[in-house]
Amino acid sequence: MSLRNLLAAAAVRGVTEARARIFGHVLNPMGKKSPHKILRKKLIGDKVSQWHPQDMKRDDPVIVARMEKERLAKVVMKKRRGKGPPKKGQGRRALKRSK
Image (tube, rainbow, N blue to C red; front, side, top):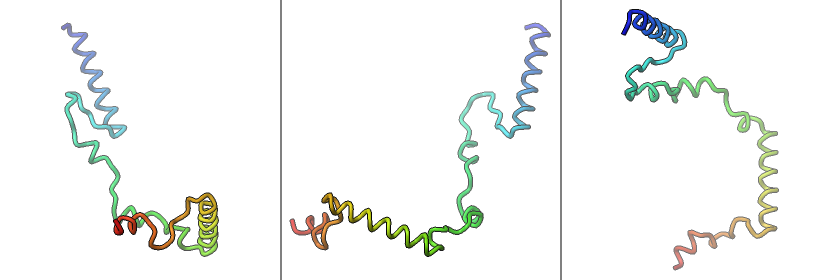
């Protein structure tokens, strides 16, 4: 290899390292497996749950009432088609017990 090729390779390596530092990427020139993908994931826990506001669906009685009304309408439509929930004591679990 000539001196020119060595200098070009060093410049490319330097640019790659600088780009990784600037954008927060992990440099992996050997291409080996790294735990970085797992460590990069967002943390789930108290901090995350504190950040998100409370659920509006549970707090607002108007929204709760509307959702309940929609759910009951859906159940009625299913019953008309014969796909509603079974009567008490006639479900899958009760049938298993009677066999």
